[in-house]
Image (tube, rainbow, N blue to C red; front, side, top):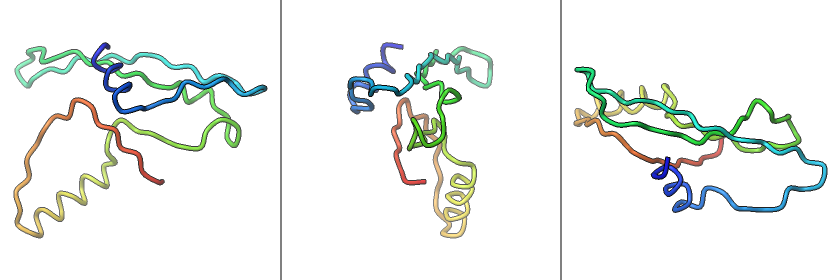
Length: 103
C-alpha cells in the first residue's frame, strides 16, 4: 500500500480541494491482489486505490475515465504491427503506470 500511495503522490494524481457545495463525495477503497508465478510461488502483493465509481451520477460528478489495464484491442493492434514489421516483442511487468488519454 505504501508503494502505491507514494506512486500516486509522486505523479500528482490528485489535488486536495474543498468539496463544492451540493456535490456528493465519491469515496474510494483498496483492492488487493496476490501476484503468483506459474509455479504458484507468491511473487508479490499488490494494492490499488480505486474510486467507487458506481456512486457517481452522469453529468454531475464525473468527466474522465481511468483504467488500470490496457484495452484488449490496443494490445492486439500492437501485436499485429510487431508481426507485420517482423519485430521483436518483449514482456515486462510495470509496477505503476499512469496513462491519461482522451476517450
